[in-house]
Length: 321
Image (cartoon, rainbow, N blue to C red; front, side, top):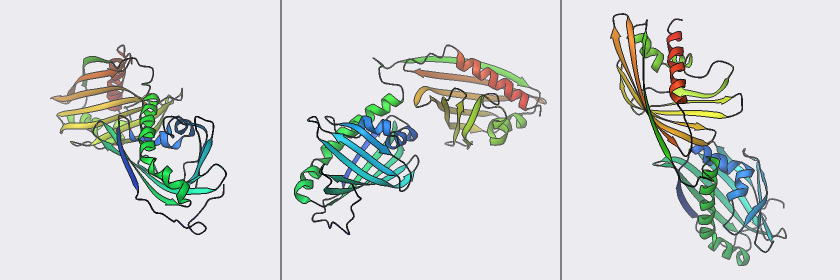
């Protein structure tokens, strides 16, 4: 169907915009991905009784957004449009058009999707602004849009859980683990502190050995309330993401931070780590205590402690440069 504009079809009715919000237990990147990949949209972008057998999605400005919704009786209705704004992972604007199944335009729905961090995950705000081309046919559809969108967002929540590896889990689970490590380095406290808090110095030791892990994103801001992210792709194609928030920072003495770990979309753990530095002449002792909550069937089996041992050894090696 050719795109229809107000220049060729003047609106006879202008309903008020529809606004909906939902808080999801997920990262912004996961929700954004659900909105911009055909395989995910096919699972959620329709009310409960409808399916989406066809989807063609090109998430860039001017890219196509095309979906076929199939009714229980087999009737099909297409939504076609283009992406007007694409700002990962926070905002999408899609200019959607719906027809009557025979190609006759019914209405336009300018759809804004805003994704923001919120307590417990992310808040998604959807606003649709309508222009009706065939008021007799389109008005009842627009009138029922609120109920349809509520059902659609229910399905989005289910899809996000599935993307994070939560589907098929009969009951949620948490396994706790705590470990303590100690290292003494032949370096002054100020040198060790720099290795822990300076982005360039930390990049030399915080991560897998070269060649095993491709860095996708690395940033850090060491201050109370500051954040750190280390995201990369392993040789297997799996993406791991370390996201930290600094809770306590005392220069040359103490760092306390919380962090989450994701493997692809699945959150596998939430941890609290405390690092203390003690000077002994020209040497420094680092004391690390970590408490972890391992989620929904993820079996750590001591691998977090073992991996941290290797990181602290790599930290020591970086101090010799």
